[in-house]
Amino acid sequence: MATTKARAVPASALALIKRFEGLHDGDKKTPHILEPEADPIGIWTVGWGYALFENGKPVTNREQAYRIWRKRWPGGLTRLEADLLLTQVAQEVTDKVVRLLAGRTPTDAQLGAMVSLAYNIGVGEIGGKADFADSTVRRKFLAGDLVGAADAFRSWKFAGGKVLQGLVNRREAERAVFLGKA
Image 1 (cartoon, rainbow, N blue to C red):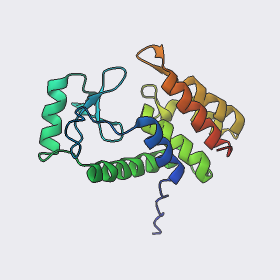
Image 2: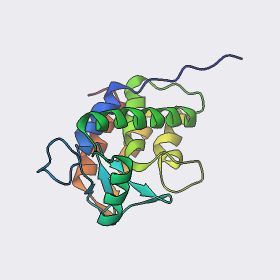
Image 3: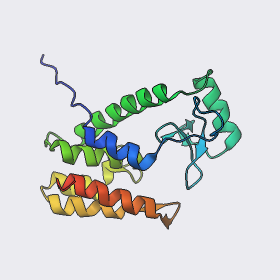
Image 4: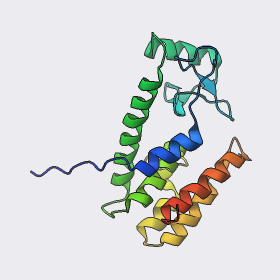
């Protein structure tokens, strides 16, 4: 039985994620240790926008976030560990996105943009909550409508029910990468 080689995380995905997630650190007084920090809608993250979860739900409480953080990284999360965590999670997201594309092969630029989107909104499962699996980006890509897929990135600009300028900027950058214009 032949095995399929995993597709590597496109460099464009890592660049987009780093550019728009930023390196989260809730305490700038400890320069070698990255501590949890709440994102714009109150979800606690650490490193390159890595959201902390407990019982399948994003953590929105500071004390809970620090408890999870201390348990996972007893010595504190370092920059090197944050980079390794990003690489690991981005590969997992890439693998899931590729599976969801049902054998249709995207260019590295297209895949990079979709991985950045999925890293931010979640990959999910078809028929689940609003995430990449049920996105118009994915549906239009599968239908061969590349311009429609690119334009659909723009609909993912809301967080907490509000349009966030950072998400508008991110989606425009992802769209440009998807179209090979960046």
